[in-house]
Length: 453
Ligand code: BGC
Image 1 (tube, helix red, strand yellow):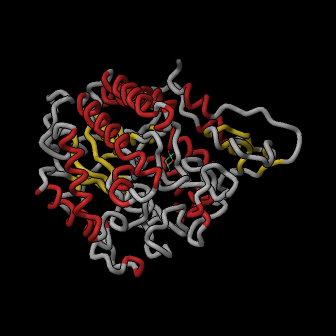
Image 2 (cartoon, protein in one colour):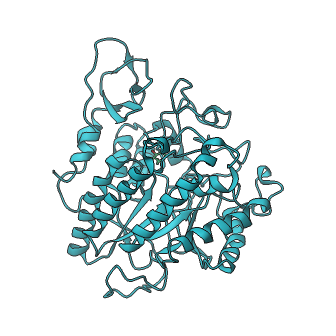
Image 3 (cartoon, helix red, strand yellow):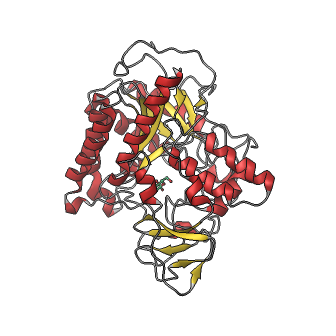
């Protein structure tokens, strides 16, 4: 299979019918879709996932796909700042004493670069267009949100390996492991492909095995993984939701399996730990620390379980200039306060955890009506760029985990994955399905980026 065959497959043209037309970036198909299945001229109906096909500007489709060059994603972005602490001659399977980001260039996801290039090519304002295009050089994480995405990881690792060999710059590939059975148990927007009732636990083990098999082939490329956004946090606060209570044992077994197997191939892992406005509340933080420490121990306290990721796909500041009024009552009103409170609790439970913090969409503050709102928040802007200069010894890196411009969830109330949070007054509507491209949202993130682009 050619290097980017799966990307090409993803962008395969869906046959069109002869009537009614959807606008550029509009929906044109998917499970539950009853509207138009053709696109206005100049755009192509393109399957994004089973739930969503979208009208992508045709001018951008062919040119946006990276070609066979092994170094297609050029200018890897360094996490600048600190000196190298890892031993460059040690095999990648040996845990370094320190921050896994230090001394590595972060590999740029060709998938996100293609999304961004397509988006930029359809912007007419020259200034906005060039700012938008610059986002393709900022590293985000690749979400392995279905088994069908796993082969992409093999492609990226091969590419990173060849960049490493040709440039001498060590490469780090960032992934999100995100395919638990009964996924997103307290919400609907990101329901996944596996169900517990239908052998999901075994299927999940198989998904992890496939990831591990890919990683094993490229021992020289470092991999950093965020483990299962929202899952353990839901077990801390949402066991009153039937689907979460039912999933508790399975989530724990699956996450333990992921931690153990990924540790065995030297993947540096950060379990997702929600955010300040979720587990940072005084009633939640100690139970959270207890659960994360248990999970660490259940995976034999591997040094590859480096710590926790916070604020994934969320909008909280790392350090708020002043508390957003919606945070009232929580002393941990931003991610720094949350991490500084949680870190010592973990350490005293036997888990000396370090942190990474998503700031991809946290550039603008005081946007939400309630702290729990999470869906396509209006007027958000891209935030602090990825860096290891975090100013906090507990924080390994500021990262962009959520690829900005991909939707958090659909506002279409007839979709099987409709979550009413996605049509609250502070959510941007109309919004496409979770994970698919949301052009107007991306343009807002660009124009409201802070620091500016
Ligand atoms: C979606 C995933 C997507 C991820 C990153 C999640 O909300 O459910 O499908 O890959 O966001 O955009």
